[in-house]
Length: 209
Image (cartoon, rainbow, N blue to C red; front, side):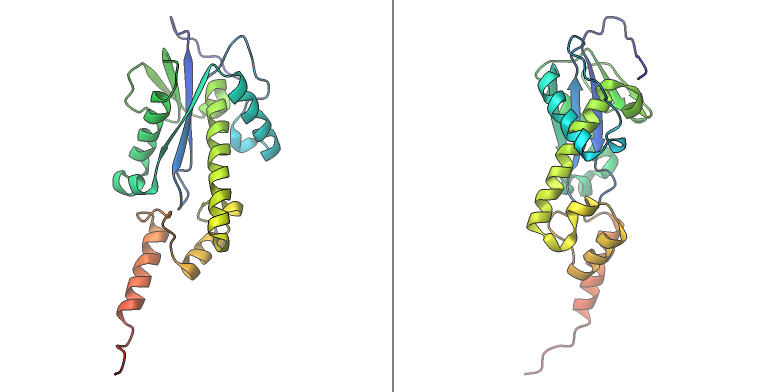
């Protein structure tokens, strides 16, 4: 892990998101302030960890961190704002939800949301900064659990398998069954499916009486 040192910063929060690319569900963010006196071994980019390891680290982070918080933006907000601005909004919500106010915030990626404290974007931060790694794990476990719940509600779509990403299976199921209320209407595969359904409905012959 790389070390980032900031003058006078006693509480550094890491922030990451999960779910920018999927066609369904919220974009989920997390903010985490780790406890230097209670280190956690094995933190890494959540995508590079096995599910078993992610779950174990999730429990350890939520137990040992000085503070952690989730933020989210729902599909309706994503459709209204676009995915970038919805993600930044969800990051703001995650930081605002911390019960301890950080002195400095490190954001995964190349864009920072407007915050009340200094912040810096760190490209590949989920692999370089422990606080961001911890946030990526919290966000991914949370969103994966939401996709498992959505799979129980809509088992025909395979959400537990593809987690809402635009896989060939998801696209095929979307064309077969249409969009759920949880799909992001502004994303092209969903929008095109809705347009096709409208077009199909409009060309149906009128009933004969």
